[in-house]
Length: 286
Ligand SMILES: [Zn+2]
Image (cartoon, rainbow, N blue to C red):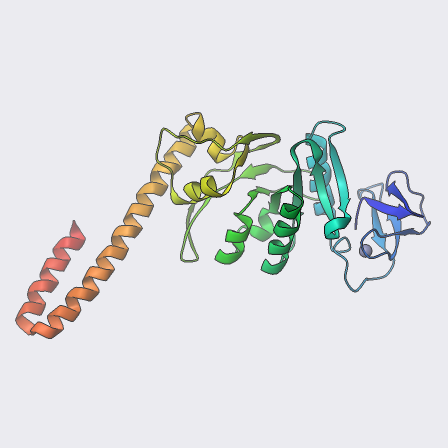
């Protein structure tokens, strides 16, 4: 479903469309009609299931997030479902003044598609801001997460009725495991800022990696808050996350040492093995 369609070569907003009249999908050219208006929000729906159309797969929740983002941005500066024929894409929301494309994602997506979207919009000199629904993207694989992390990525709980929040959240990950999460931080997506260069506190690894990749942040996100000293809960999380990183590093180091020692002990014989084992237990306690 979508908010705009084609009416004999002209763009038409669903709010201006007539019921029971055929329009065309801008992506797959199939027939679409207006629906909703009482309990459901207005949208165009496909009369038949198309073989390949990204607009067809959008849910009401997806449209509600698009509308919410649109309402946040300054009037006249943003465009819903803006077409970029050069790369054969329709952006969920385009903020012209800052060259920002907001891409909402509520359903699963392949790594190939994320890579392609990143590449296509970058080729036009635009920056993607991914808005991922927390229901679907709370836990994702390491390689997919790394692809999203190449651009600004935030999360949402907004439902089909438009209720919910837009927030930043940092997951502490290593080797595919999530060890902890930062507090959820309400982010102002209408206030982009350059990424800060200096911090008074050391940062945990997910934030140093974000800092290295992105030249953009938004008011209220983790980097923005930590630049200005942070909030108590966020500062506490950064300290705890750094400590957990240190512990994991120590555990890795002990594992390596233990392997080396057990190999050496085997080579030297039983009396030395028990002595080395004793030393290793002492080291682990410290
Ligand atoms: Zn279509």
